[in-house]
Structure formats: C-alpha cells, structure tokens
Image (tube, rainbow, N blue to C red):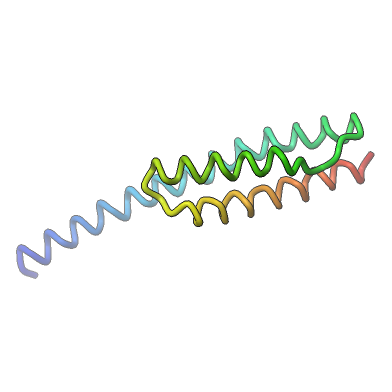
Length: 100
C-alpha cells in the first residue's frame, strides 16, 4: 500500500466514523421527537382535536426548507424527509384517536 493509498484509507475511515456518529444522533433525535409527537397525539385524542394540522405542517415544511438552504442541503430532500415524518406522526395521532 502506498503512502497515498494509506492516507486515503485513513480519511475514508474517519469519514465513516463521523457518518456512524451522525447516524446515531439522527436516530436518537428522531426518538426524542417522536416522544413529543406521541404526547401531542394523546393530547389531541383526549380533546377531540384532528390528527393533522395542515397549516402547521405547511409552516414546518417551509421552515425546514429554509434550514436546509442555510445548512447547504437540498431543500427538496429536507421537504421529503419532513413529509415522511409528518405522515408517520399523523398515523400515530390517528391511532391514538381510534383508541378513544
């Protein structure tokens, strides 16, 4: 292995370790986020509120697209990500409502 190849292998290893740490942060952050959205779902169900809030969802998507641009991330990726998360949250809220 040449010095150049060894250096590339070290850099690759460092990048992959960073990716692994960031993946863990994402998973734990999503877990924390869903704890809060579950609490919101229970609250909505207890008070007969609708599972979805289209106005809030639109504002959140707009906010996340702005944050994505600030972070030099494709806003479309951010929108798709949040749209998926919102659909899961609504599904959970509907499950809470069905239990009532």
